[in-house]
Image 1 (tube, rainbow, N blue to C red):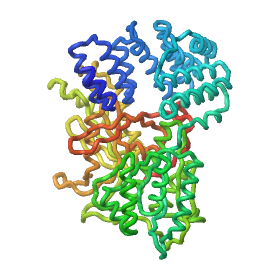
Image 2 (tube, rainbow, N blue to C red):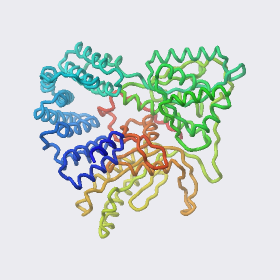
Image 3 (tube, rainbow, N blue to C red):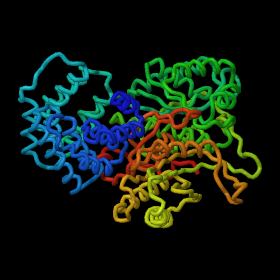
Image 4 (tube, helix red, strand yellow):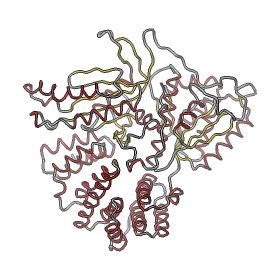
Length: 611
């Protein structure tokens, strides 16, 4: 049982890991390992309220012999603090510090000591912070043979302790040494940098010294399509060589790491090839399956590009086909793919505690030009978000209107293509409601959720329900995210015990964003939504942890380009259906604009989504 739980947890399948914990607890209700792991599943999936309730119900604070069980309460309070601001942040930070201090008193461990020190400082209490910082430096912890990662954390903790004690030169030196111990562990580096930025902000120090230690910067790339030859909208080999040299220079100058974009003939492929030659990770995001994209955006510009396209695909870290459509049906779909690509670069930068950059190949003097889709559209979206943009001059002459990828405009008669943000929700455990309590369930649970929908500032443009489930669709992802948050709050306010309903009932909400077909439902004779993207949204609901909001990567990426009122935390790559590709899912949480977790985030573009 434990091995299966650990496997599912490590694979990011938190819903299944949580279910297995619950199965085990039915037979062994006093197993503290199962209790601890169940709470970790809830914390990782963003269900912090349920995690807090489970932590207290499971009495994990009473475990005396296990540092991990003892520390989970402090970790939960720290997570809640980072999603708050002002006095609430200070209160939660202090409570977290007290919990870590209690753990240190029982175990004498190094981990709770440094966390107690930092949380005290964030709470505005430098005295105890310095006391625990000295424990880290002079506590006499054993120094034996350790792994590169363990050595990293040992040095990073000491750097943090020196910072808390005001010894900035030694903190800098120790942090550089920590990074040398495990140079490629960028995720660990990002965690440390994020914590140190919070601390230097509280201490009133300059954070510029941290910038050189940031991991390589994620990038979004785009550029004009061109063929190879002597005609219009083509470049000769010499011009292509100058372009490649300029791309290589910019990638090095801006310390570019993972790159995200499409692979159209011309600029896209040149940038992708240069990135791969530098050892950068290539992430290819396409609006349609590879054959459809190849026929629309590569093959028309020459056979040589096909070979180069296939070589890049073979070396890519991932190739994302956002839809199963066998043709690129609209400019809207192209904008959708580029927006998801930009959002993925921005989310990756947040994970790595750095800032993204956009690499563009476009003609000089095009600032006033506008486009419905393509390179100039991508330029405008990125620029509206206030993010750094690097432009490389296109070295040739372009035809009026350019040579961007072509797209059709209509589907079959009676159907219209549209981009929709979709929510599916249901009540997990509703089958356990006794028949005599079903009317009360409808009145006290489903009716308040319906009332919440009706009270939304931005009401859904499509709504449906069945049994204990609802399907809602919105124009924009931030509208759907706000609705999901409001529905979760409305459900949390329902006292199940007061209405003699099972306390185990939990609301599951799943979100997805993508192109759909709008047309008349043959049975109900009213407008409805159809297509594979609707099915994806429905399947995500089944793997969502009760109390959480799980969204697709497309939803999370588009939201990252339009709103910072929410945070999307990676859950894992999950099998949502036997016949569908695995989906990378994220847990969605609402955040106040000045929350600690929003440190260094830039303003966002309200008009970034395709209309």
